[in-house]
Amino acid sequence: MTSRALAEGVLGRPIAQIGGIYVLAENAKGLVIVDMHAAAERITYERLKKQADAQKLTVQPALIPQVFRVSALELSTFEAFRERFEALGFDLSVVGSEALALRAMPSLLVEAPLPATEAMIHHLLTDLREFGESSALEEMRNRMLATMACHGSVRANRTLTLPEMDRLLRDMEKTERIDQCNHGRPTWRQLSLADLDKLFLRGQ
Image 1 (tube, rainbow, N blue to C red):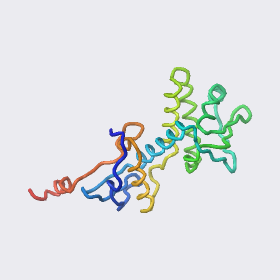
Image 2: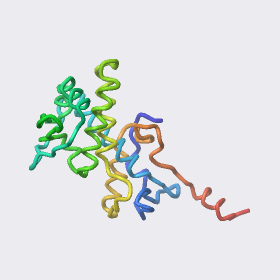
Image 3: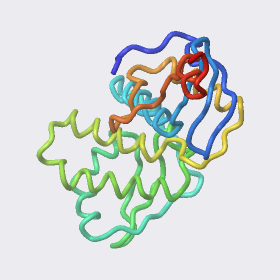
Image 4: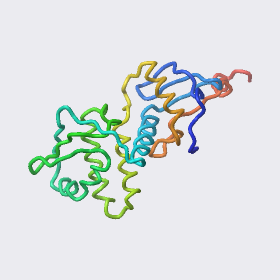
């Protein structure tokens, strides 16, 4: 996996979306296939990490607080690691004995649908319960950022317009380590014209 960003325009121009999962683009070499969630996840993670490293996470208050039911174990985990959430831009407070209210969150995540946001909070609490005491602070922070990026990025089965596809490709080109998502899966593949010719037995 390369750590550098890609050259501008290397991913070409978008031409279609398949199955709500893949974006197809044409470039000078042939066909580019992008896993849009994997790519968006890496983009979001790198942006969150850059802001966190600079201690400049931008936060957006919720118009209406989102209230999530949590277990007693999750509630005690939150109380033990409340400052970790605050450091990453979350304004969470305890509501009664079985719920948390989300009053603000990182601006990069605000477009995530409510179910994804709720799943993210539960996942973060699980991460903290399992690894919070044993992991170094930066390692735990990066684990939390990866969870946030996964739940807060564009999801599969979402239809993108051509301008949205183009913006995804351009954002990919500006992002370090874009070849893989945070889970190690590839974000894009290149098929050359020669590869396509082989599929159709051309020139044989």
